[in-house]
Length: 212
Image 1 (cartoon, helix red, strand yellow):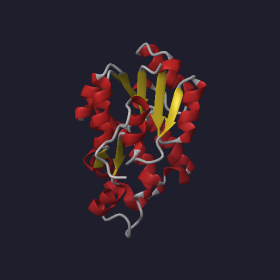
Image 2 (cartoon, one colour):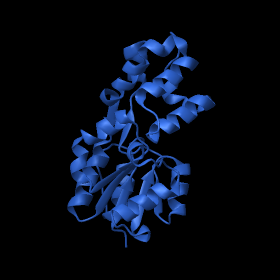
Image 3 (cartoon, rainbow, N blue to C red):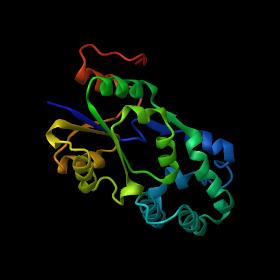
Image 4 (tube, rainbow, N blue to C red):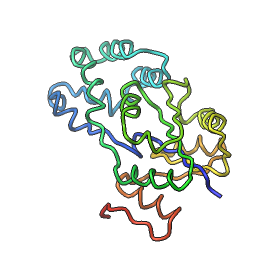
């Protein structure tokens, strides 16, 4: 019997309007600094720096310094770009409405995310916090997905039995880590339809207002 649901944040409960960020800072045609946010894996040094940033091992200033050595033309705008992330986050309203119903119906809900200070700020200042029983954020706990230890930490901290718990994430590699921690998993492969998918697991003929 499923009693608990662990939600990823970015890609499941919310997404970033990267085009809006690019437009605000006129980045696309000038020097393509947007890849600092959406193409991080293309540069090994920047990829490692961002991983360390998600683990809380380096500060925002450290991350910006490393990025500026790789993309000198982008250096002046990098801190402002990171600061702008919270204002460009679009929450999945349909899914957040479902989390309220699940919470009200007695399910224990945990938010588990590979986070940076900017997304941590968004999470902590969102109305969705009322629907959750706890939070595990990588930059605060020093662990990140897909390391199975972050899922075990969530279970131990909030007294969750893995075989009674779903982990919902948009990245298959993160779900693989959850499976190693013996959690059941759901792949969010469609941001706009995930509310109906999850709702139908718990409620007969569940329909959100999202048009499919």
